[in-house]
Image 1 (tube, rainbow, N blue to C red):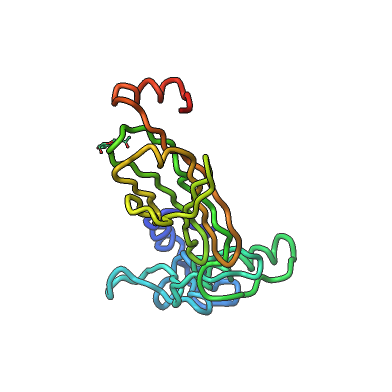
Image 2 (cartoon, helix red, strand yellow; image 1 turned 60 degrees about the vertical axis):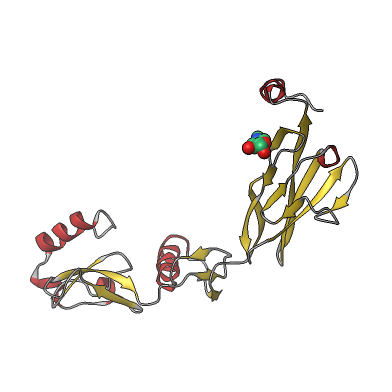
Amino acid sequence: MWAVRGLLLVLVLVLAQSDPQTETPTEALLAEEGQPCVRGAGPRCGPGLECFRANKKSKTGVCMCKSTHEVCGSDGVTYKTPCALKSANNRRDQELQLEPVTVKGKGRCPSAPLIVTPPGEVYNVSGSQVYLSCEAMGVPTPVLTWNKVSPRVELLPGDRDNLAATGWLLISPLTEAEQGSYECHASNSQGATSAVGAIHLVQSLEDISVKRGTHSDL
Ligand SMILES: *[C@@H]1O[C@H](CO)[C@@H](O)[C@H](O)[C@H]1NC(C)=O
């Protein structure tokens, strides 16, 4: 009955359903995170939670976790708060009678890097400024490095002074020597992954739309 719904709906329900019998809270009446709480009557917030009211005068509020940091569970899942982990355990108990999840550590669970924005392909003329971008997610934050992988393998930035490499690979001015494929490599303590993009030199700006349209490689 106390399923989490829109806050207003919940508050309306609280006012409508508060009856004298709920005044003595038992274990079963302890509210979970996000559920309503009423001063002096009705459900009280469970352990680790406090009743948060919009203002001092209002009688009803919502149970909020006292700690607001994320935690990593023994199931490898990141929970928004320690209370969210506890709530998940309560549901697991009832449904499947599984081993309870314990807190493995404060903060997000460690995870291997995942490249969310791989470098694409760019076409431009000699002397122009081009860049490839790469974005990776992971815990801890992945370290990004770039390698040129064709026509020859080259660690970047190497000794090139027209090139800067961070989350972006910026080349200015573009010369024939920079044509080729570039690999964005993301690594952290949990693993490593990479994705490849390419830079193409074209004769004139008119070639860019043509090259894009036909997907031809230089
Ligand atoms: C091509 O080079 C010009 C001049 O440097 C630059 O303004 C433009 O953004 C570049 N286009 C692409 C697709 O990189």
